[in-house]
Length: 252
Image (cartoon, rainbow, N blue to C red; front, side, top):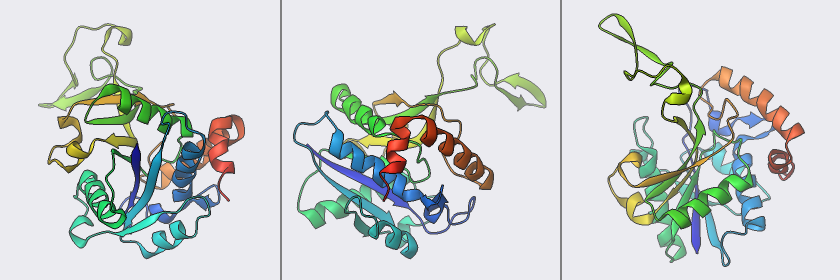
């Protein structure tokens, strides 16, 4: 089985300035993603004959330099096309272009593309293993990671309709336990079939499955407050959980 791991990051950011080239606990943020991949490919037990490549798609000169300087894994650099560098470009299109370029560069075919988001670094090698295991077993278009939601639109989430506060989804549930289980997509891990990746469908248009990751409260960096919380939570996890600390300790 041949896996393409993709890492995508634009230059700049409207929410948190230059977040893709920022540090987490004194180490480059992107290194946490490379470290998790490195640990997975060295220790995984899911695929008996694993072949893989890792590719970074970016228009950031600084991010290229940071990634090229890592001592954990060789990462191929794919230059972000100008038409794929805008704010409203779907990330799936960038991942698909990365696959097309890598297929040309490596003269090979891939069985699955696994994308790891730079700004959701609190993941463990077992999360990648669970993702690929679910993909292999499920026969779906895409598997993505989620966490259990802290709120439920059937019970304790509200919106304003015609000036009136109402539940997001009208229901007669009197306890959250009665309502359907709800999950938040945490933007950490995705495993795409090649056909679906190259289609024009959105991620939820295909047949999908999920893996449930630990709820670490803040998994995606969007603003300065997220960054501050992330450092606190990451420090706690790296001090108290061996699987998270392994990712931190693996970064040279």
